[in-house]
Length: 396
Image (cartoon, rainbow, N blue to C red; front, side, top):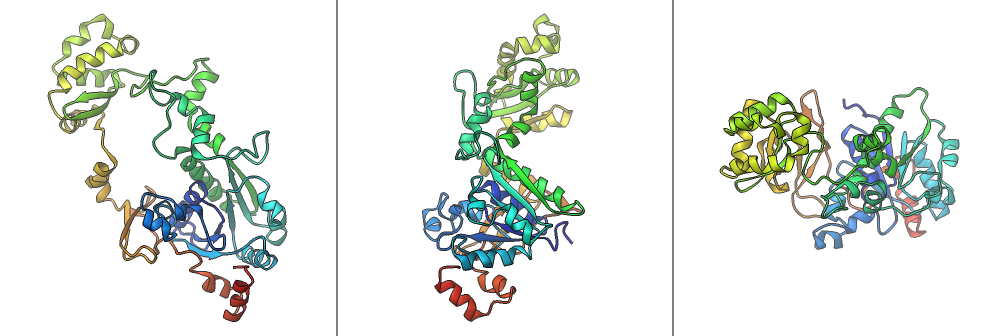
């Protein structure tokens, strides 16, 4: 039994933030039903690095976070479609949507309407800026939020900032925040609530250290590149064949590091005697350390330094880390064989969570558009003939 077994979630979301939230819920055991637009479905079905899959409406971006879900189609602008959706809502515990504020209300299926037919419904609305405020109607994509939140201003270094983080961090953080809030709401008794997730505020919440340095200490956050401004030596260093991250944040780690690199004499120099002096002179110290680090490979140094208690790690590419036993042997990746609509095996990421020693997985691959119409709507009492009539009328 997974934590969310017997919970039904209606996933009306598109692209990443919402689908990623529901991806977490599905792996926790919830039955997640993607409620998709007739004919086109989730926009992510047309996105990703494989043009053929995008053409087949099974784009890589869709495959990435929709395993374990079911798919039905409905036209919420069609009266019969709206009635069908409302009937489906009566069977659900959670509805998740990431339309702009007001869209669901204009369709006649906003929170106020749905709570009338399902008083204990948990309704989660994910948007760029929240359900109120002067920016609530602004369109929001990941990069917009990265820029608006200040993330880009602290990414890169003095010469290159602002820079975009190299993956959709704002969408991902917004999705994780929504999943957490939904799980918490499911624990309430009695249930029934409106959850308003602002991607902007979600990202700012994860920037607590940087934001608090400004709010409390009056220090404006800066872009520090690969340097950790709180300590030295702490950052990325040139080694043989690539970069190595070293975090000698404690005085005892500084001693261990300099001993291992045969640089103990550095500790006698006043510019490196204390944490604060090392921070002030970090760039000169970096040159001293790199002169030794460049003589060996980053991976060799990482093994040795970790063994003596100095946190270190080679800077890897995505393919390199996926091949590492730490990832490959823990069940983080899950393979689906001969996926319908794809025609081959696919590997997808899970959640990074184990329960009682077992990684969380789902049983079914990402669904084709509308593949579960007959099963889901049939369970509501609609016959095949009735469903065909709804299809011909454009409701599904």
